[in-house]
Length: 245
Ligand SMILES: Nc1ncnc2c1ncn2[C@@H]1O[C@H](COP(=O)(O)OP(=O)(O)OP(=O)(O)O)[C@@H](O)[C@H]1O
Ligand SMILES: [Mg+2]
Image (cartoon, rainbow, N blue to C red; front, side, top):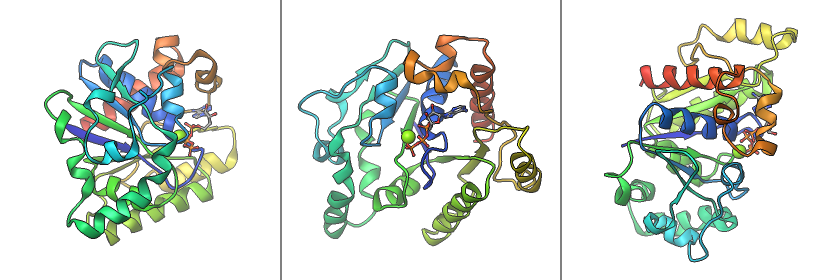
């Protein structure tokens, strides 16, 4: 079972849009996929119209007691672990647990479901927190959306620095240009300047109203319109991530 985290310490760069659509595309390719909503805002859960069960808690999550709280979606091969608002306390809990235990607390969380899924996709909250460090250590692949602007590039540089600090190297990072508007000079110039770096994948996700409309349709873009430009872009992105892994 592979774990792919969708992460950037910058907010609003297209992490949740990528997590939802990549999870959907991976399930279409025949994999058994669990999308895990790690963000207490619960945006990924909202897109699938799924609410958490009452007895679920952030404490249970960290103990790896997640099996009973996984929900199905309308799509074959795609399940969801919805976020709780109390996931905002995960940092505090991790801090206490770390003091008692060596190694990554997070490694144990997904052990109980290892035989049931081919892939876990984590939709992460922004900000470099303790939770992020655990996710960065645990994930096999870190997919990071970068809007082709200065501040998003800065966020990528910070992620590269974090992986060096954590001594895990850059190899698991796969960046892609997100919300691209080629008619903007800054976007085109930034892409031209940075695309040569091997951390970047070739596929770009354009800025498209179809993606924004996910908030109304509440389903992945590929389910709303299979041959739309956005659905095809996420399909290509999924293929590139999986080919290069
Ligand atoms: N390719 C795109 N084209 C147009 N709009 C997009 C695109 N990707 C994301 N959006 C819109 O931009 C907003 C932010 O996207 P999203 O929620 O995916 O970002 P995020 O990085 O997960 O944000 P947060 O850091 O708050 O979790 C949303 O309203 C979403 O619909
Ligand atoms: Mg998000």
